[in-house]
Image: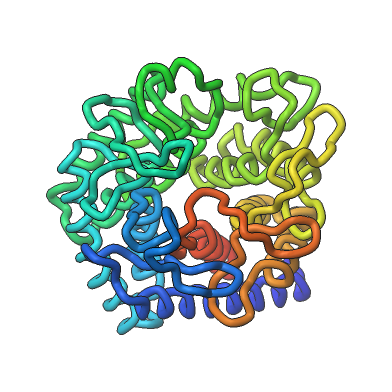
Length: 402
C-alpha cells in the first residue's frame, strides 16, 4: 500500500470513528420513549421532534425494524470502542441491556417480530386511509422486522445473556426454513396472510438480509452454513447471463444497485479469504458501482437493459453500505479501482447527506436537494446502516494497517 493510499485510509478511519462516536453520544443522550425504546423520532432535514400530531411518525408508534437494528448497533459499537472510549462503551452496553429486555419481552409476547406496534404494543398496519388496523398474529410468515429483531437479540445475548443465545439462534434458523419454503412476507405494511404471500413476486431481499445475518453469526462463532445456499441461489437466479447486474426479480429489468452493493459486501464479510467465489463477487461489485453512481449518490433503481435511472431518488443508506463493501474489496485485493469507488462514495456522503447540525444523515434526496421521502421507517437510522457500515470500513483499515 503506497503512502498516498495509506494517508487517505487513515484520514477516512479517523473521520468515521469521530462520526460514530458522536452518533453514539447523540443516541444515548436522546430521551427514551415510553417502554424504554430508542428515540430517533425526528425529521432528518429540519431536526424537528415528531409529536402526537405526526401520525405514524409520532412517539405512539414503535417500529420493531428500528429497535432490532438499534440493539445490534448499540452492542456492536460498544464492543468496538471498549478500549478507546470505555465510559461511552459502558453506557452503550447499559442502554443495550434495557433495550434487550424490552425487545425480548415483546418478541416472546407474540412469538414473532412485527414492523409496527401501537401505543399498547399491539402489532398493527396502516390501512389505505392511514388508520391503524390490528395485524394478524396467528400466522407464521417471517418478515424483515423479525430478522432485524432476532439479529439484535442474538448479538446482544452473546454479551448480556449467553444462556439465551441458542433460543434466539433457533428462531433465526426458523426464518431460514420459511424463506426456503416461500413463507417470507416482504411487504409488512399490509395485512399479513396467505393472500399477501400469493401476490408477492420473488425478490432476493430476504436471502440478502439473511446473508448479512450469516456473516454476523460467524463473527460470533455461530453456525451459518445457510449463507452458502443463499449466496448461490441469488447469483444463479437473479442474473440472466447477458448482464452482471442483479435483477430485483428473476428475469426483470429493474436493479436496485444499493441493495446489490449491500449484498456483495455481506458476501465478502461472509466468505473466507481466498474463497473461489470471491472473484465473482468482486466483479459484480464493480458492475453495480458503475451502474449505481448517479447525481448525489446511488440510484434506487436502474434499468438493466440500458442503464437508465428509473426513480429520481437517492436514499442515504446506499452510500455507507458502498463504503463498507468497497473497503472490504480493497482490503482483499489492493485494487485501486475500489479505492476510487471508496473516495467517490465518501465524498458524496459527506457532501450531500451528512447533516451540518447533528451526527445524522438526510434520509433521502432527489437530483438536487434533500427531500422528505421515507425510505423504510420515519424513525432515523439508529447507527445501523450508517454506523455499522462505517465500522466495517474501520475494521478493514485496521486489518490493513496490521
